[in-house]
Length: 290
Image (cartoon, rainbow, N blue to C red):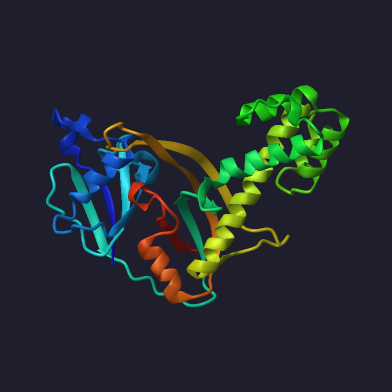
């Protein structure tokens, strides 16, 4: 296996072609990187996109352009007019019980009744629906309610009982309990409760992935998982069909600490990725020792 850092070649910015880098088109980025593997008919790499300035500091010529980290079965082509390619062999030496810091950009999806659901949107909708049912507010909802419809009904028609329920949700989540020290209105409490539901759902998703991929989340002195999530983002794609159907996927950036529980299974996860949308920059887990 190979680990590569792919950055934009400085000379490319002096050409008239620099606008060809499709930084906001996940499918086009995938196709462009694939050109670095000239003999592959099937994709054998996973990657993650970052911003060069944040990753490479004050190196000469570094701008705000993207930089890509790749793990691949074969080395990428280094003779390229667009990209500067740096690569090395990648075969981590690991043992069961090793603790590693990690970063992971993933597409968290769950399957229910044969349908796939975005974990974040599913968790938030589930909480909003359960609150409307708990306080008998369904009558105020439109036939096919959206997220904002739920929120509007809860804020307009919720009373002290709803306020108490949201307070309880926040009290029971160590990440947000301190928010109750502020002067929060009903809308504020609802927003923070949605964040709480999101964090819990993402935590559960990654725990399950760990069970299948040879790792477990580490805990701190309070027995809380060493895990953070940021950067929830929706990426639009256009399927190249006759009707050019619009679709897409979401991504979340996870960071924290894991313990290796099965070396071979964990290495497979490092080499082939975790979760869905691997062709579009998700799934690559970057790890380092403490």
